[in-house]
Amino acid sequence: MTKLWGGRFTKTAEEWVDAFGASIGFDQALVMEDIQGSIAHVTMLGKCGILTSEETEQIKAGLETLKEKAKAGELEFSVQNEDIHLNLEKFLIDEIGPVGGKLHTGRSRNDQVATDMHLYLRNETKNIMEALRNVQQALLNQASNHVETLIPGYTHLQRAQPVSFAHHLMAYFWMLERDFGRFEDSLKRVNVSPLGAGALAGTTFPIDRAYSAELLGFDSIYENSLDAVSDRDFIVEFLSAASVTMMHLSRLCEELILWSSQEFQFIEMDDAFATGSSIMPQKKNPDMAELIRGKTGRVYGGLFSLLTTLKGLPLAYNKDMQEDKEGMFDAVHTVKGSLKIFAGMIDTMDVRTEVMEKAVHNDFSNATELADYLAAKGLPFRDAHEVVGKLVLTAINKGVFLLDLSYEDFQAAHPLFEQDIYEVLEPKTVVARRNSAGGTGFEQVKIALKKAASILENE
Image (cartoon, rainbow, N blue to C red; front, side, top):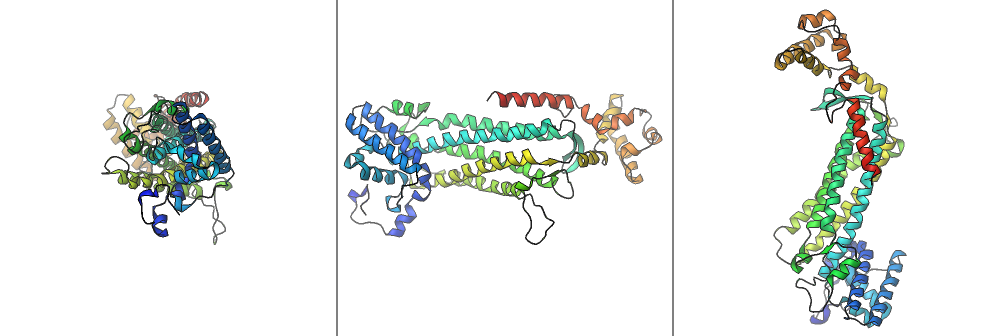
């Protein structure tokens, strides 16, 4: 079949070459954005007198028809027409006749595809921001129910100090808040219009780029036509923000997987987010958490793939840049799906408070409290650290924990210990006393919950 750009060519490519070079297999995801951009473009052409009002209205009506067909899934895309732009142009010409060929006046596929991706990412970034808020709400809901539920805090995956379970969950709330901010900030670079930059040098037609940008809801236009068609920073930035988000989700996934194991038993995942074994009937596997943890690599891959594609590319557009889309589409799909699953997992997980309570009593995570106790009485902290280390060793040798030691054991370790040491060592006391700003003390946790709720309420 004759290509829409084929006037200069004397032979056609073989089918397998067309198939290799075509992007319609994936860029058809931009169908609605491409139509949206085309409607704005032809409206501008009419306003500027480049097309007659009759031509403008005829093309707009044809595009509206294609939009309805696209919504109904009635458009059959062809590899021979390469990409979403030429497919839609062919559909338009078939729909309204040769006047459809005037749509492309004053633009190139180079600025057209860039416009499509700006529109696509603007919409999907907002969807992801909404999904982030849903996960934050789920975390806040669980945290609000567990301010005084205690869990061992870990460093090096070794018991360190007891913390409020709410405090632990809210650490992820604030991680996701930073993620939200990154996506929100990226919209400044996403919401810029490349439309009208042409292939690379602008156009001789008296177009109004600011008007088409206004019609599409863009805040501004690219100031340089070369930059407009070759910039993919906004996708790199999106993939970077998406990668950080997936990293955060993966960290919490790892904790959920550990906490739901037989060794921890701190939580149980809802059946809706777990699977069984084909051979071991007793198994309940936290598969959705594992899958999100695994899918993190897909998003990282999209980021590194695009960075590698762009490395060393000369201005302006190059065919290499066709490789900018699949990773972007995949990352959007992966992040949105992961966030939706996550909100459900957090909302429905069963927190086993009695197991957590037992855990914080059967360890040495209150040892730091002893060192602080002695330091508050004037003993240099390094000396206090040594005293407590030896006291821990005494307890280990006796096969008990610090709260099980006799008062004589404490006195033998250092005369500054008094009878109040048992109250000081109680896990709830240990946690409540850590009342510095941002700490795990119950009052601080309540303050944090109020701040978090205020953020979500003001959306």
